Structure formats: C-alpha cells, structure tokens
Length: 317
Ligand code: SF4
Image 1 (cartoon, rainbow, N blue to C red):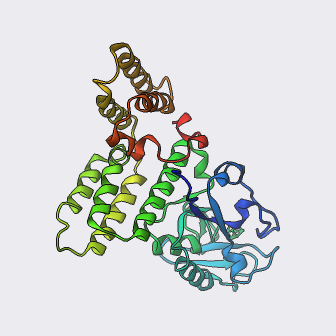
Image 2 (image 1 turned 45 degrees about the vertical axis):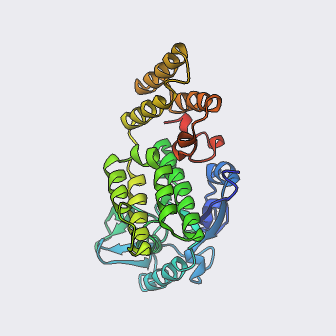
Image 3 (image 1 turned 180 degrees about the vertical axis):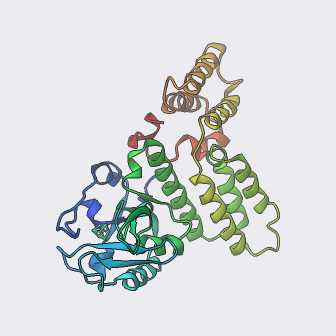
C-alpha cells in the first residue's frame, strides 16, 4: 500500500489542543487535527513548557533587532529565556531524524516562523522577528519541510507543504534502505514531473548531480541531492508548468486512446489552464485513462499521486 507509512510531524502542542499557552488556553487547528491528522502522526512539542515555564505564565516577547534578538518577559524584562529556548531547539533538532515535517504556531516569540512582533528599545514593534525556538530548529534542520499554522489557510501553501512532507518521507525511506547509485537514479526518475512543475532548472541540476556516480562519495552526492530537491519543491508550482507536465504525460496515451478521448483529455487540460476547473479535474481523467491503459513509466511517477487524495488538496489549486 502506497501510504502505509504515516509521516511523523513535529507540531506546536497548542495546535493539537493542548492547553499550554501563556494564558492557559489551546489553539486547536481543526484541519491539522481532524483532516491531516487522519494521515499523519504528530509529535507535539511546547518549547516554553519544556524549558520549565508554567501554564498559565507571564507573557514573553521578542526584543532587539533581527540580528540580535532576545526573548524577555513583558512585565519583567529581567526574565530572559533566549538561551534556554535556543538550547532546547538544538537538543530537539538532534531527536527529530524520523520527523518528516513541522508545523509551528504563528506569531509566537518561541514558535513563530516569520513576521513575529519584534520590539525595539523604545517599545515599538515591527513584524520582522522569528521565534527563538523556530529559528534555531529551522537552521539546524534546513531540509525539513516547515510551515506555520496561519499560512496553511492558503490552499497553495497548504498543498505545497503536504507535497514536501510526503516527498521528504520518501527520501527518508530511501536513506533508511541505504543509498546506492541505482536507488538514487530510480528516485530521481520517479520524481521527474513532480520536480519539473516546481523548477525545470532544478530537475536538470539534480540530474547532473547523478550523472557520474562511479567511484564518487555517494553520501556527499545524496546530501547535495537532498538539499537541492527540497529547495526545488519549496518553489511555487505554476499553472503553466502543470499544463506542460499534463500535456507531456498525455503524450504517453497518444496511441492508446481514440480521438474523442484524446480531445476530452486536451479539453480538460485547457479548462484547467483557463482556471475554469481545479487541477484535480484533468488529473482524475488522466489517472482514469492510465488505469485502462497502464504504462509502467507513468505508473511510477509520483506526480500523479503524491499524497492521499482524500486530503482534497488538488480541488483547491
Ligand atoms: S506557541 Fe509554542 S511555546 Fe507557545 S504555547 Fe504553543 S507550543 Fe507552546
């Protein structure tokens, strides 16, 4: 079964409903818990609780500049938990090898990924801070797919995050089996269209990394491949590139379906290009034709089936 392995996702504890916030409340996110939670397992982490802060607790905030940020008490600025949060992030990063993604709580001085309020010496705030825990964790695990709860309301960002989580999970499975030249080449071939809808140039760079594998340090190649692969998937997948990929894949059906079916497929791709239907429409039709006319190469392309369809992510992009 394709998705037998449930990805493990690190998550801010308050998002799964744990009452760990400074005011003793939670921030349960129903999509994450009720929908995505059907397909993944969560590892909830509350860094503020982990460093010994009680609930409820006096609030903290970011103070300083983007280059030199401290995490201080709002009411009592002599309370400084910067080092504690950073040390906890470093320790936690070392324990997250099995995790395939991370969802942070927005706006938090500990967990916020971006645009967190950062106060200057005179008490004015700009939204240009990063939570102290999130900053160190993301720097320690640069290839780990990370996203914020607030940004996940955007269908494009949500689809992009889930896509990266499942792609990273597949990469982790490959690493767990042991890196060999043939496994790397197979991985690359199966992700051709999935990467190309994000960046054709990145797909070519990835191909060049694998072009001479005899006598090279495979560990170093795999490290470079992982970084390039995960960076490529972060880029927004454009509608034009989806259209190109669909038309290219349609070519494999050319001699196997009759003229009216070919026209129906072409019309569906065209309707998607004109933004009249979501991506799921041509995708479903394509899969239907390939079920009736299997093609070994296309069957193995993750692009047609990158994550559980019941998440409905391609209905909204
Ligand atoms: S945002 Fe982070 S630190 Fe704050 S309550 Fe949630 S998990 Fe804890």
